[in-house]
Length: 164
Image (cartoon, rainbow, N blue to C red):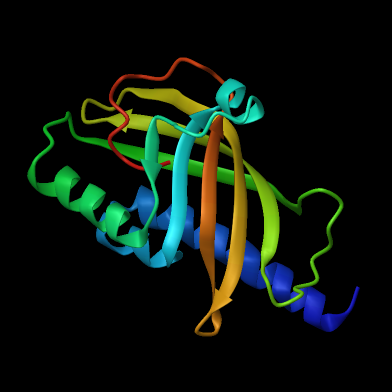
């Protein structure tokens, strides 16, 4: 493995770690900064994803839509205070691609587990699945051009307030 590839992998692992830490620390206003301006973000069931059905539980087609979602969470939506804890692992290139960046970005997959912690201390396994992502270099940093949070289960709590 070349030094450049090692550095690239460390940068990408850092991107995913910082993404999870941002959400877990309730720094939601910073969350859209992980995305390009013309990004796509979905939370979708595995069945719909595999069937090629486009709409998900959450569907945004720009960074501005992500900003609006955060503003709604902070100002308009009413939900029981809660926290998430993300465990993100097994980041790997998709479809036999390599860690080499050809200048157009990388298609990656990573597994996730999200634990939800309520104000009374009750913790529950909220969601499991995989991210199916496209990342690109933008202004010297990796950003998500597309992030699909593909849920293992068709059933999810009706209160999906915080992004996954």
